[in-house]
Length: 252
Image (cartoon, rainbow, N blue to C red; front, side):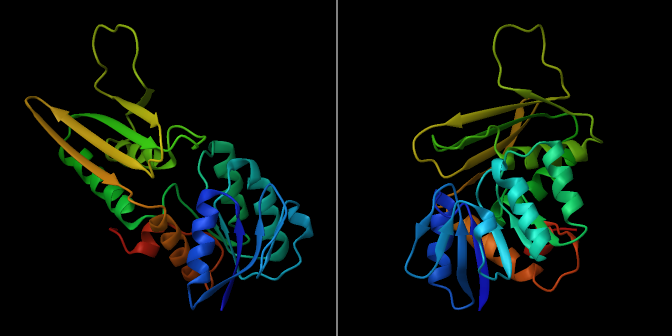
């Protein structure tokens, strides 16, 4: 059995992950980390990460960027592989993750869904093939999601931008008046409402024709399943940042 420390254990994604682990024959929850203490039938959830004494084979983090330093510290102190599924990180946070990966294997992604990562791969191809088409990215999530745009929207932008030799720039939403649209800007639009699990669309608009690709998450389970697949994959891997595309066997 693979012992999993679940970070963000009392959040919506943490609860989905724990439920999947309980039904799994390969995993068990060793302990949880969250904002509040809680004693469950099979494990304990701690609000102070330094109090966690249970041994774990891997950490899966579905918390928030606020917990990043604590999670990285625990992974480094205990030499535990780490799957980071939280979003909202800035460049400084990503640099911390990269530095920590020199000592423990880490998978960090804005989305662990197979479908989304295929969408990212295809969006990069379309951006290259549809050179000259203008690009817009639209994403929608539930009303409790704190960060905007989503980590997936940023993944999609990075993909189309790389295909255009990093010449594109982000424009968050639109308002007011402008004389003309800069062809190298990518409008990124975020919706937060209801219980939307996660919708993403990339629109490529040319003269008299539009190509779009979209993904609709019908449940949160798809993200937890991907995170568990990543957790199993990195157990015997060497230190470093491991790309989610490698785990899901996508593309190059």
